[in-house]
Length: 275
Image (cartoon, rainbow, N blue to C red; front, side, top):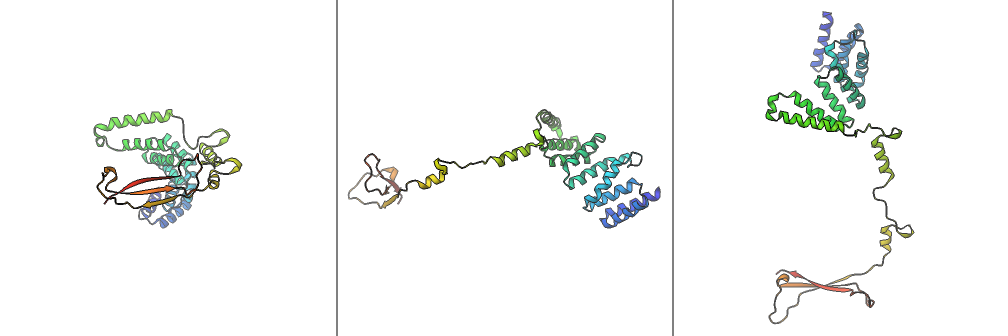
C-alpha cells in the first residue's frame, strides 16, 4: 500500500509541474496495473480535466460515483468527486445535470464550499440568476471573518434572509418551468413573438399601406422667398424683440387661383438678424 501511495505522489508531482501529458500516461499505466484502485482512477480523471479534455474525465467520474462505498474513494475525497464531476459537466455545457450533481453532493456534504461555488455557477447557467446571487452572498458572508463586516454583519445577513424568503414565496420564473404540453415559458414567449409582428403594417382601403396612401396624395409646391431688409428714411421705433435688422420671408403654395373657401395660401413673417 505504501508503494501505491508513492506512485500516486509521483504522478501528482508531474501534475503540479504542469507536465500533464506525463501525468496522464503515468496514471494510465498505474490504472492498468491496479484497476481496482479508486484513487488512481480519480487522479487520472483529474489530469484529463486539467489537460482540457473533460470528455475523457467524465466516464471515470461517473464510474467512481457509481461504485459501492467499499470500493469507492475515502469519505474525505467524496466531496472532491462531486465537485470535479460538477465542474466537468459545466465545461461540457451540461448545466442541468451539473446542478443536479451539485445538489446531490451538498445533501451529503452541505459545508463543502468548492461544491457550493460550482452549484452557484450551475444555477446561473440554468437561468436561476436570483438564487445564484443569494447563494453567492451567503457563501461570501460565511467565508469572510466576522471582523471584516464590522457592525454591519447582522444587517447584511438579515437582508439576505429577507431576500431568500421573498424568493422562496414568489412563483418560479425559471426557464425550466413547464407549461401545458411540455412547452417551456421561454418557448411560449418565443413562439408568440414570432407569430405576432411587433409593428404590423397599417392597411387602408384597397389593401394599401399608410405609406402607399401618402404617396398617392396630391403634391403641393411650396415657394419660399427671402427678401433682404429695406432701409427707410427717417427715424423709426425699433422693436426690441426683432433687433436692429430683420428678414422677411414670404411662403406660398404656388396656386394661381385658390378657391374662395380655402384659407390664404401664403404667409409672411420676420426673423431677427443681429448686426
